[in-house]
Length: 199
Image (tube, helix red, strand yellow):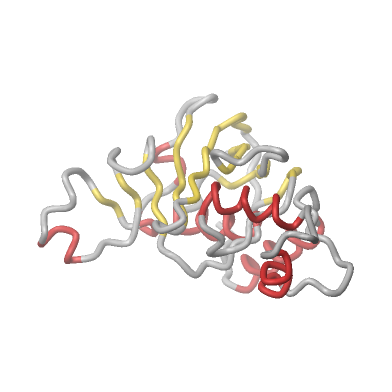
């Protein structure tokens, strides 16, 4: 089977940031993590988890750390991402789940299962998408909103600092609406071909 998902970063508007992707239903949540990272443009440099409704909801699908249990932070089932398939969780069209990336900035992604198809595919595919991914470590949705406002005003005293941090050339603008679907699909295909993720 093939799952069609819409994945949207929560609390980002003007413009919203989302992707529609097709994924083989027998892929693991570890695979799904890499799909989300590549299709959005994240750098895979922070911790992540999947859960029904975000922090404090169970089961949590994430890398297990002994200290989580030693100090009593875990109160429900924790599953390693490579040990569970998408088809173990996703059963019905319209079902939602949450992916959180970077527990400091807390980028919450709302995952919605839009279609279940009977065809079998080997590799994931980005169907369509909207808007650039926020830069890593920009302070979460509020920090990103502030960054966009500053970059819209070259007279802002913080403009040069942000432009330099983002590596913008002189007179180059940060376009939050830009998304290169073809390039991200190429990266996605290369990743799963290289790692032999065909099922």
